[in-house]
Length: 177
Image (cartoon, rainbow, N blue to C red):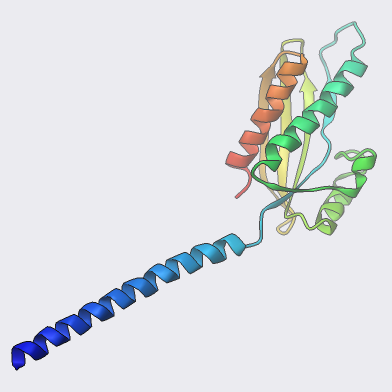
């Protein structure tokens, strides 16, 4: 009789253990589900500015404006694959750090419910060397999350497109928590 009771107790303990494992497993699944419900990372992307200090004689203003616009599109496309982007109201016009300025950009980004704001500049130093200077700002903490210089080679459409894609990967890897 004692052995039967012991066997029954062991069986009940086994059932309890299975039940507890099921509860723990459900808790892990539930916490993973609630983690997905957490507020997504939202990023507002201001238009990048362009600076040319190459000293080249030929006027390339139109080419650089077209490349800068294509850079912005490629950057948005690459970032939007993994990050929720929000539009800034000023993007129908000039929407850079200089115009309307950092204070207005930050206000617009907060109004658009962004957590972060990306600002930046393309700098053509020479025909062969260019820089992408950018910063990601935490709008809740009013502080930069990262501030980086990346270099790229060449002054062609392909070079600028690759610079945009590399910039997006760098932002995802190093700047967005």
